[in-house]
Length: 171
Image (cartoon, rainbow, N blue to C red; front, side, top):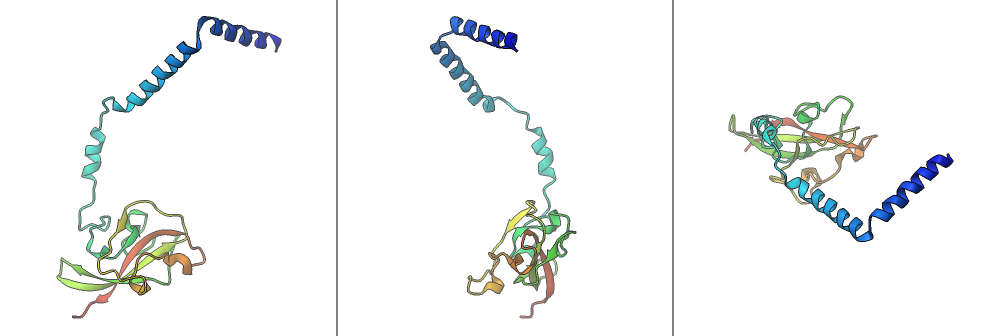
């Protein structure tokens, strides 16, 4: 062990004899400047072009612009292992929901929709969607999407949200 101590002492004293504090600070400044300029170097971003081809179409349940999501707020279960109307495995729908009325451009009719939070796992984190069409103020909680509806479940962890058609809206 003594030889190892001697080696480190000898090398550090030798380094101290050859360098000054100013040269050490100058070298450290050059290193930090180089590290700050590193992100400015050219990077091949060709992979992003492939990713842009994979964006969902507006009429796809994986898209926030899907007609059934006019009053949704949260992560789409269709991107988290479920569908637009069913929770992913390992989660359970909250027994309390908020409602909305959305227009289907495909058939020109309005539908009453129930938005259910799927609870039991940590947040999915994919396909976040927040649309507030026809949302009512907080004093009408059944039509407000800003609450944690999982609070009624045994496991109140929010995972994602689904949109279930309840019926056709009559005019």
